[in-house]
Every structure is written in structure tokens, then in C-alpha cells.
Image 1 (cartoon, one colour):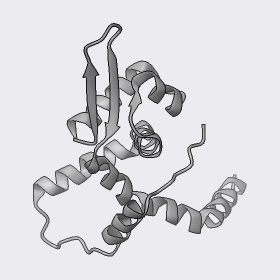
Image 2 (cartoon, rainbow, N blue to C red; image 1 turned 180 degrees about the vertical axis):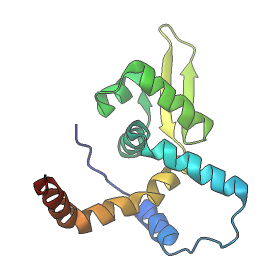
Image 3 (tube, one colour; image 1 turned 30 degrees about the vertical axis):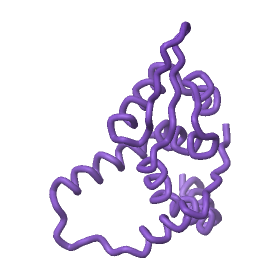
Image 4 (tube, rainbow, N blue to C red; image 1 turned 90 degrees about the vertical axis):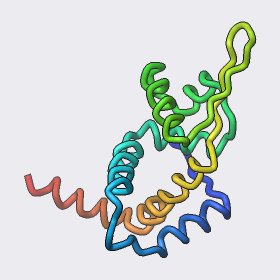
Length: 142
């Protein structure tokens, strides 16, 4: 399932701000650990897809989110959402009704993480043909 990225002006502005910054030369080990953890988290395709779906569609129930992400198992989506909630990327709201109703919303922290990775979309758009050429050249070597 292809999901089209739709970034708001605020997300684009945040991405441009992040892109224009220079990382500090002396890095706090806690920041280094967080970056390593977050790279691992967003490298997981489910986290990125959940970020995109919630940014695009807003608050969703678990079942609607699963449909929108597509291909994710209930167990994997649950694990992904729990990790994202722990990191402050999503808010989980449980309503005391029968059957239980649970909704997920991207937090402002989640939006800014999505904005920080907005540059990947720009890079991919600018370099798609070069990557395809490199892959073709590599595949022809065998």
C-alpha cells in the first residue's frame, strides 16, 4: 500500500530548520543514545508508516489504523504503538465503553520527528534516478 506524504507548512519549516542546523561537536552521551534508539525505531517500517498515517489522517481507532497501514499484524502494530507511546510520539486514549474504544493521535513530538525525516523524501525525489541506475549497474555485474 502506497501512502502519499502530505506535509504541512509547519512540518516543512521544521524540517528546513533541522536541516540547517549543525550538530554539536561535544555530544551528550544521553543524546547519542537517544539518536541511536530513534534511528532504530524509525528504521522500522511500521513506525514510519504509523507516523505518516496519523499525520495524514489524524486520530484513528486501532482497527482503522491497522487498515490504513496495511500488512501489519495486530501484534506488531500493538508493539509499535506501545513503543511510540513510550517515546511520546503518540497519545493513546481509552474510552470506557463496551466494546472498548481506543484511539491514537500523533503528538507534537511525533509531528516534529516526522518533520525531521521529511528531508528523506526530498533526497529520494532528487536522487531516485541515480539510485535506480546504481542498482541496475550492480545487478548487471553478476
